[in-house]
Image (cartoon, rainbow, N blue to C red):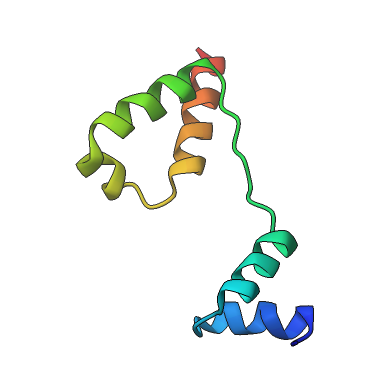
Length: 74
C-alpha cells in the first residue's frame, strides 16, 4: 500500500489508479462545493440548459460569483 503523499502525486501526474486508490483519494481530497446567491444560481441553471455556452466559459465558478457581485453592485 502506498503512502498518502505518493497517492496524491500519482493522481496529479495522471497515472491510472486502482479502485482502492480512487476510494482513498476521494477520502483525502474532499470536493469543493460552491454556493451561489440568487443571480448566480439562476445563471447556473441557465448554463446547464445551454451546454455550448457552459463549455465556452473557462472558469464557471468564478463567472457565477462575478454575476452575484455585479448584482449586489446594482
